[in-house]
Amino acid sequence: MKLAFIGDVVGKPGRRAIRELVPQLLNQVGQLDAIVINGENSAGFRGITHRIFQELIRAGADVVTTGNHVWAQQDIFRFIDDDDRITRPANYPGKVPGRGFSVVTMKDGGRLAVINLAGQLFMAAFDNPFQALDLILPNLEAETDFILVDFHAEATSEKIAMGWYADGRVSAVVGTHTHVQTADERILPGGTAYITDVGMTGPHDSVLGIQSDLVLKNFTTMLPSKFQVASSNIKMCGVIIQIDEQTGKSTSINRFQLSLL
Image (tube, rainbow, N blue to C red):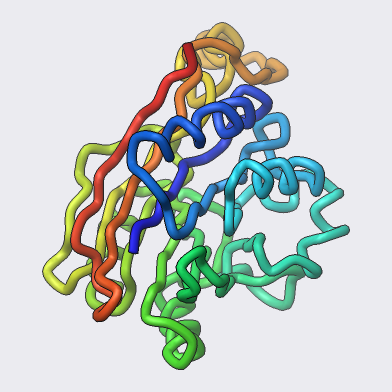
């Protein structure tokens, strides 16, 4: 089984990259059984709307994950309870709209579970993501052996710890949120594919997708500035993961970066 996970889509440039580069990716790697996209920043850098969610689905996404900005657009409350192809972090405290994991039927007829978790270090006051994983996994055992975790977190140490904690229990743990693709992809001893961050889909001549001059003004003067999404050097970043159909364990993980000309 082969799936793609595509990193945080930033604004209109990121959405354009998805539309134009997903077909190019398919030409390069062949048929994919599933595509998962993090849409956390797809609506003007923060959040997602129903229209944009549908745009990502039409472009090939089977599941759209989010993160700490999931509630940034009011439109999210209109549809997050009604469509199981979008997730929010499962470890939000209390009862909140939406779902923290999704199980979808892949193109080959198999079932893929996608769990969405958020980190605690340097983030909002989320519940413990490790305990949240423990609570979710028993619910999925009867449904599928193919489980992917999107861990939306700031700290490298917390992401690596999650990889080791989940090793042998899920097919893959992929990090999102920091927008910089890391070069540490590997298969852990228990058969779990891991990468600290899959990277950003959007304008890379920027500071994490934002116009660099606006960010520099903020850093050098401490004066507030209204951030705007940059527009140049647009790339789509992500990973291709191969999973053994008999065991649910991963056999390879390879990162990619595709550029718009």
